[in-house]
Amino acid sequence: MNEMETYNEKTFENIKHIDSIGNEYWLARELQVVLNYKEWRKFEGVINKAKNACINSNVNMTDHFVDTDKTIKMPKGASKLINDYELSRYACYLIAQNGDSRKESIALAQTYFAIQTRKQELTEKEYSELTEDEKRFYQRSLTKKGNYSLNQAAKKAGVKNFDKFHNAGYKGLYNGETANDIAKRKGLRYREDILDNMGSDELIANLFRISQTEQKLKRDNINSEKEANQTHYTIGKNIREVIAKNGGTMPEKLPTPKKSLKELEKENKNKLINNVKNK
Image: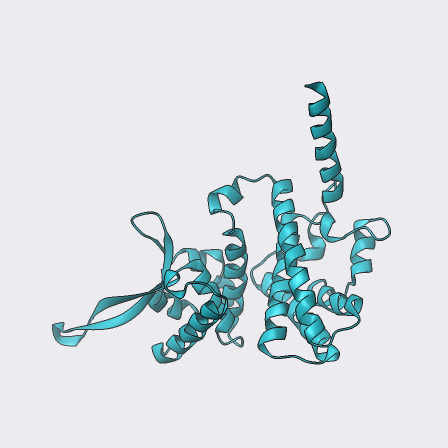
């Protein structure tokens, strides 16, 4: 798979397995091939880094990395037993995070598994049954939590001008647009929250920008405001490039919802009050 255009969501879905009780998993040996690692030794090194990341996150590692053996055929009718792993979606996400970032296949895996792992906080079925507005509320909740964590990491990295820091990320993702530029393009009022005026797909792209920047600030021990800003810009730009390679819609081309989440919240509150009054 040399042509990156052949990589998309199906690339990873096609090698997904389902066990007898309906749990999904990926085999490490199959993931190794998709991620363009020629040597198992090197790929297993990435797996070990991912295991450590899982442990450091206070998550039960054995729930996500299950040792398994498989028999492969050798020349002249012989066979050989090799080790493998059954990996959860979260395990695949951690492997992608700890893989060789110079590989374009890794960048695409990061996008796919990061988004899908976020969705897994709801079941796939539950998420798919949400309305677009419900998906917006759900993703907006995740971006709020993500921005809080990102701000903490940025502060430790030496960031003091948070407007400049966040604009660096927007510029990377939105081809040079600042938060104010985005707000003007969307026709928003002064100080109106741009994230409250995004559809679910646009929120997901920003959520990925937020989470990837936080992780890189921590992983690389970045300790200067200038470097933190550059990191945020680069992450945003990288995500934009991945979207382009996947044939996706650029975030600035995505439609702005007719109603902000604040307006929807107000409407829902008024409906609730009216229902109580009418009882």
